[in-house]
Image 1 (cartoon, rainbow, N blue to C red):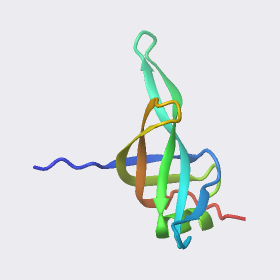
Image 2: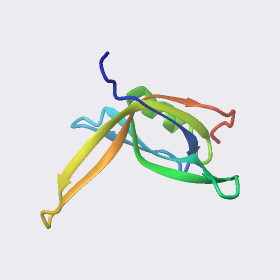
Image 3: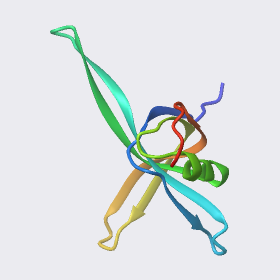
Length: 117
């Protein structure tokens, strides 16, 4: 059995998608999304549940998925993102190493019926 790099996130958009045209001829659409994902933690001593949110920045959608985000998604919408994790490494001007994980969205679906105004 081969290992697969897959991630599914369900949450609410923290802000409107940031969509831009990229490439030499500006013919490719790219959307940057930020998602608040519920994180339920159980307090074992009291037996209570505590609901927090994890904020996932760095979700990137390309092409048709980016166009969908631009046309139909706004801050607060509940969505599901299916995609894969990609490591991103770089050095800044001071030669410091940086690292982050980016989610490349293969599929985005709305889970509520709000329409973009």
